[in-house]
Image 1 (cartoon, rainbow, N blue to C red):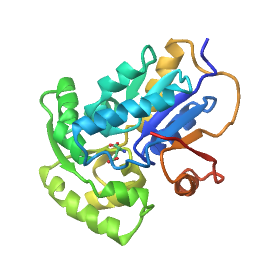
Image 2: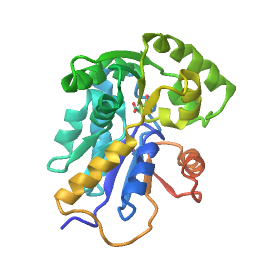
Image 3: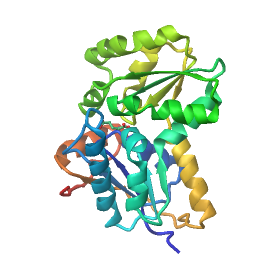
Length: 267
Ligand code: DGL
């Protein structure tokens, strides 16, 4: 049995830590290995060809650690390169954040008007609208790319006036469409959730796919008999492709943890 093997999670940077948090809460006995491609963040403004190449490299790094499952904690990769991840991970199950987010949003909306914010690549791919329409073709989807949210989150500008200003600029338009649900279609955005929520208005349901991904992970590992039942409290094994000290400090702030060790790997 593979119960002791880690769950591999990756993103372009710190965004995927929102998923790590949810996995730790739902599956506290699991060992996690996280890769943040900090040398090449952001992915969102890049071309599909580049994003697919990065996705392949990210999986290759995690595969060296023999994970029992891969979680794509990046909407951009989930939208444009999930097939690349599935191919590169062979027989290992893969979960992407995008499908989970779409499912949650469809369940949450009451007036069938959903807003999606994400990176330029995710929004241009139309992947959220497709996933939502597969579940319910009646739903109206309005999308908006919010590229500056990624560097703001990476800088830790969680409650900064600049973040509030940019949130107003991005979200004012989307608010005119009568949406009752807003999908945070980039894993960096939950880091800025408070400002996003205040700007869009508290009556709108915010969807963060991290919890849905954690539930799905639990379900898949239970079905395959690969849940780790041995109690352990080891911190995630953290890998980055650049600036491990910077990542370590942000990790400590965001995860409320001790300053962790972060390993530098080459991509
Ligand atoms: N956090 C990622 C996402 O969910 C990528 C953000 C970026 O690198 O542009 O899309």
